Image 1: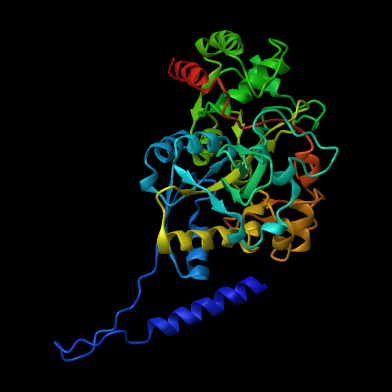
Image 2: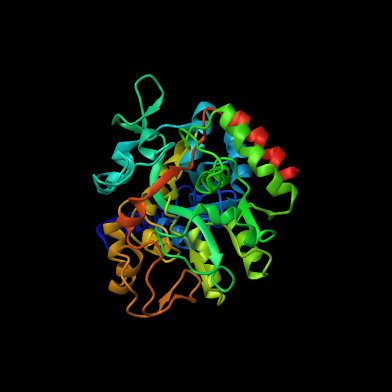
Length: 426
């Protein structure tokens, strides 16, 4: 395959040769004892978005290490990571978790010189946008959190140390079942206000995460004309009070069917017919399509809520496990993983390397936004895109040129957490 694959193969063969050489023969027993170095175990904490069995199996085979995946809900794993850094070696979630983890001392700097494909990473993470005309979006754009500054803070000035590996990313909005919700026009009629439309009362669900779901609702309130926020990425205490006063009657009257904490849960809600519109991540959209449900990934005229995946190194990880963790980080940018996650609608930070692992039809659909020339399979092997279909929202550049807000931990995070918990438990 690529040069990096040959390098990995060479390293693997070298380790096999070393392992097969007797280190010490014991004279106490009749036969010599061969001491074989054990494979390092890297414990990865994160969400179901990237902690998938196919990825674990492939990475173990490619790298000759062992991986222990512990997926969970986003709020759950963030709490564990920030309070128990000894319980994981790598953390995979979204850029809105970085400030919490860094301030808690739960993660350590990543040496940029050890990231093999750093020079291939595109401008989205480095400068905040793919093209000069694109909207950066409100809130914590990932380039503002990437580099560790000389004073120990996080910022956008380039340094040799980074707080996270830039890898998987996407834009999110909501999904709707077109069998019940009339199909809209991308960027023209589709709107966050649909989440508060009385026609879908009792059949709406939101993600249970204050740094994500809160923005879905704030965008909906603003799109419906119920309030106007000066900076939707940095809501004040007064803004939060206004937002939840508006939302309370909706909650009390049963407008929301409930909240979900994982991609499988969101899929189950719509596949069982409990909801017809909800906060949704891309893998859920294509899983539902694979089940025969005409799920649409909306392209709101107000703009998307964007997120950037982060892979962070625990402050407690050292030695050979740390070396193996770096190899796993490099593996993610080596081509095959980026192609795999493209088939569930996600992008990778160095897409050109993954292009070699995708067919022309796949690349044209997932990245270029062109109509599919053949049926396309998802990560589960089911057809998720029919010939002639075009990706909701269009191309990579088009979608990332229309960002309203990034997933963000605001300065008012503690207050927002209190409001959110009262809202979802009411």
